[in-house]
Image 1 (cartoon, rainbow, N blue to C red):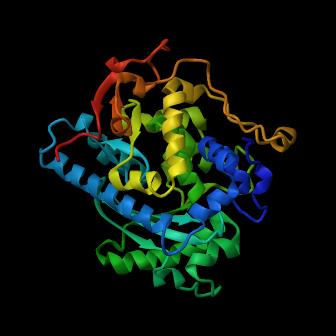
Image 2 (spheres, rainbow, N blue to C red):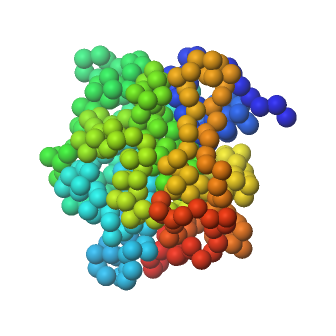
Length: 386
């Protein structure tokens, strides 16, 4: 069956030039086509976005519970207990590293609201907010696309909040125009933290889908750098996702390059250990039941290719999107070192176990091997007592 082409995507799609930056979202589009993407991810009051909000809500609750259990001593081995990092909520962090890492990057008291935008309409479909005090996740909320809050208007421009990205067509300008509205919303919902630091993160949903399809934490972090650097490195017309304002340390880390960023962030979050990502129950259902083509891709990719090692992630060659001829020919492949990958299905694990989270001892300093066996497995799941 022939693949779909880049030309099927309308030029009116603001994120069109960013999509080849995502290894997995581009493969999904090649296999399934733009009409498939529109069907599942256009937006509305039912379907993917509200279900994603529910799934992130569950992930945040797990994170809050894990932090509480680490602090009260219920979890005896926090080095082998992982939880969703609030910022961003698709990344995992080792429980004993969460407090220090979050304070280092975001400060003592902070909120971040993630604005999830539809690539199809450029409208805001979901707001996800997390709050941390002294690095500890304490509170979270989310607002779906049918909430009247998204119809609040910018005082000077008169645009509704949900339509500002579509009207502005510029990530940074959109963020500047939206942040005052969102700060008011944050202060209404949690007035006790009105003086806390506040950032927003603009995210096209395609970027989140791409990260969700990535097998490991190392790949996730590299993909985040790709999205944050879309404009500067890949010469895209805009960011795929960005912070407003930029947390100073994160901005500095992006400047050390893809390899430097990924190594440093993996060190802060998991002490460099490779984690094969978990799909918690509702997050899994969003894709397995709601977007089965996505789930089929993720499972087949893990079975057939496996997960890239940290060394492979650091040494892969991204597509040259600055080369006009290569772009026109849709040469969007990622080139990895010709080394063995990690194949947890070969360890005799079930699908539920493979996608329930796997903590390994593999780091960027692990020498290449012909195979990576079950001896590298530290623990299954994200750890901690029920």
